[in-house]
Image (cartoon, rainbow, N blue to C red):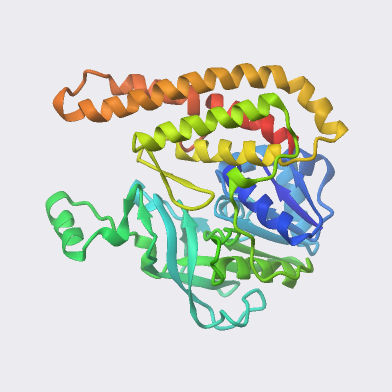
Length: 405
């Protein structure tokens, strides 16, 4: 049995849900309050990405103590990105390392694949990968603050080089010639090259009490694309499940296509919201504010709330793919009217904001100040919340959909 801590996960929760569902391993999706009140009775707790601070708040002191007790008594903990950060010093403290402070915001805005050096031997590393190199996906990761001495922590992978699809913010790193990068450093004192590439740890593992943990800033649960049979991340993810007593037969995760998810719940309000969101995404793409990154992810121009658009896109497609059993139907009855009204407000506001954002970009050189940037920021806050802390109307909609999960 696998338990998944859902709070503050959004797009990363749905990514993990897709991965675990495909394995056929029994699982439960829990809120922090569930863990605080009832503890854990699984073999493996998986914590997906999303802000670690908000996950800690959702668990509270009682939930944090339950997770620590679970691992001390022999349970396994697998954390990706924000879920990795949650386990560090100042959080669950399963690992004594800290999260590194990245004062340069650009160093956090890294996404795509990085070539990583894999440790030579460890039970949680597939034998075929051990001692080699592999392209592993990262999506806006944090960074471990590696101490000089760490005999109790094993580094399973280190970043070494940029992958072919790496982006820094909304700029494709592979398109930046080395001489231009050097010139930018001289002229503007801007360093686009991610400091992660200087051999920083990507994934680490260790033991706490009788239990064990693996923390990865690479999203190993990322599915491959259609026709891609060489995705090392999902092979590693599936190996970890098997090593920790969650048997699954497949060797790769299926591709994820939100728009192709079969509709099992033909509710008119949900279907209308899905179609409205598709319209907003088409508008944003036509304005150059969103652009395709993969079958499940839209990239975005810097400053555009891309995580929220991706989260809503996955949430609506996967909600429509749920079985509308009696319990969900009763719950949806209490949420349906509020969701419909809120989504209508969101759709109108988001359409206006996207167009205004594009207008602001157009006027930036020819008529600076004509459209006050502060007004755009305030509107974004109302609709999409803070880039780091979430909130806004989009999060209220996500909360209602995620309750159905």
